[in-house]
Amino acid sequence: MVHELIDPLLKTWKEDVINRCFVPDEARCILSIPINKWGCPDKLIWHFSMHGQYTVRSSYELALHLQRNGELGHKGASEASGSYSQSSVWKSFWHADAPPKLKAFIWRGCSNILAVRHNLRRRPLQLDVNNLAAEDFISTWRYIMTMINSSEHAAEAIQWFVFGLWRIWKARNSVVFDGVQADPAEAVHLLLQQVSEYRIAKQNLQPQPLQPASSPVPQSWCKPPPGFLKVNCDAAWSAQRLCGGVGWVIRDSFGLLLCAGGQGDLHGSSALMMELLAIRHALSECSHFHLTNVIVESDSQMGISMLNGRVTVDSDLEGIVFDIQQLVASLSRVSFVFAPRSCN
Image 1 (cartoon, helix red, strand yellow):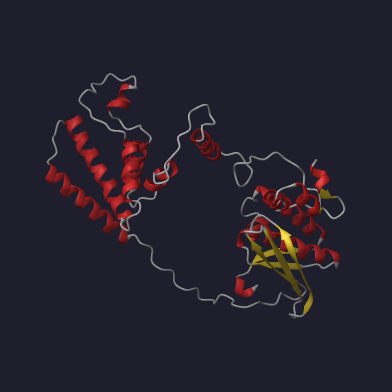
Image 2 (spheres, one colour):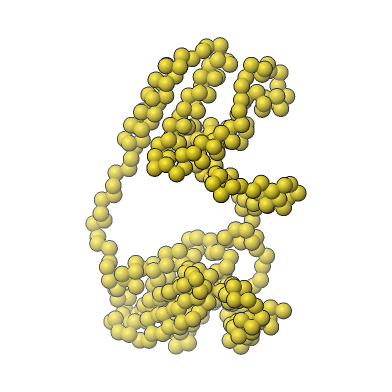
């Protein structure tokens, strides 16, 4: 059972037991899971999203992954190492340097919902589609992307390809709906004109560089206001070993050092987790010495945003954030402030 791997007094993993019972890779993964100190309530989470909340997007990505691996009752579609993956197909045209209307057109083609002969036959419409021609759009797109992906001019080539497909589509519709055969030379002229106009318009819409702020950004540590203490926290983390260390310094409004501390060889799965562990250790020290009116500074902007409620807390960090909130409740006044690395 899991509780046999946890020290009930220290609220930490029994590292010697885990290292003895599991292979090194599994042991590192287990030890990198944080254990909260103040009894964070258990809850069900959706394992396939960062925040633990179910989203249609995450379930769609999961379904695609299972389908590719043949786990949905269909034969898996393996891809050669040099082929263009399905996810890369969508990214390639959504990131193309082209107007949104043309990107939507490419998406409709890759989604097989353009009004071409094959698709019209599947619809309950009374249309004569015998004279319409169509190809496998997404296969063509994937082939072209594979050919030009390694080129240094890939972005420009994709732009020309998108505009070219749009011009061909317009010419095709002119034949189908108006009975007008487009002159090839005129079609090429319109293509060149459209690309040129788009590039000029885009260049004119480029945002102007922001003027530097009138008030200079602090480049060094600043004293807290009278009656307040400032706690500066920092952390280091090794992705290879899934562990790191934390440190903190507490100063008063005169800039005098009150106390400092740190701890090494802490386990964690990310640098952000280690930054939050540093804050938890520092606030635990403040609670132990009954310090009040505390300003906590950290150079982890994401961590500070989570603690201030500006972004959703990742599911694997909820236990640490819960502990920090419990510590905050035991102190008179605590605020969390982001500080650049040069000021921390």
